[in-house]
Amino acid sequence: MNKYVKPLFVVGLSSMIIAGCGSQEESKPAEKAPAAQPAAAPEKNDDNQNKTDQEKGNEEGLIRIMEQNIAYTLDGEQKEQTAFLKHNDNQNYSMYVLPEYELSAEEPNKDVLMWTEDDSVFMRIELLPNDAEWSIVEENSKAQLAAVGPEVKEAQTPEDPFFSNTWARETQSGSDIVTTYLIKDDEQPLKLTLFTKEGADHRSAFLEMAKTIMKEDK
Image 1 (cartoon, helix red, strand yellow):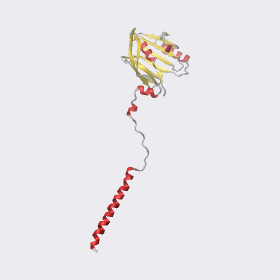
Image 2: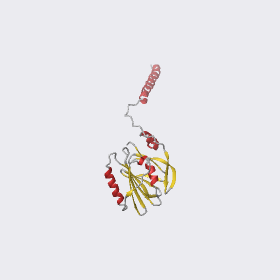
Image 3: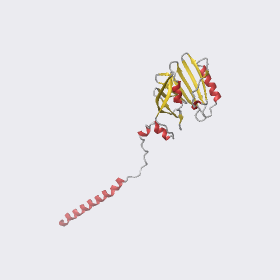
Image 4: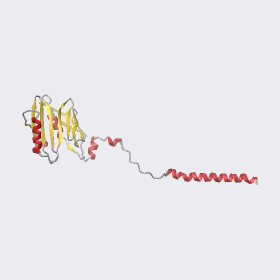
């Protein structure tokens, strides 16, 4: 019987090897197709978080180029420079800002556009509600001006359609000049308060930039 033991052992060993190979082959599909797991949330793309101002505008239905030339006068001298599109999230609008100025939030519903060489020269921007009570806004504006200077008088407005329905008053204290413009536009009512001074009359530049203000959807 010993002469059959070796062949039987070989046959048995071969069967085990074949069975083992079959088990490995059967296990391979399980490795390729693991049990279903909940879908992971898509990773945020950093590029989407750093969109240019123009891309942001396009998403919101606005088509505004990234820069625009603005002509203005500064202390009686005619100037023209390239202004760049800036978006403001505090009151949800965009505007073109000249290089020597900086736009920033002051407090909720109020922003300041300041001259970078002297931050005491600036324009306060307030987007008012469409149903603003203009008589109350005018009264409050007069009181604010009267707190600065003793005499509040009517101020000139630019000959531009943007200012066609505008209330403007001004006062002065020493060399400091404060001018308030209430722009009574049905779609985009604004209150602009300009703080300038003798020898640094930036009112024209501020108003030209203010003309480019455009509300955006939240």
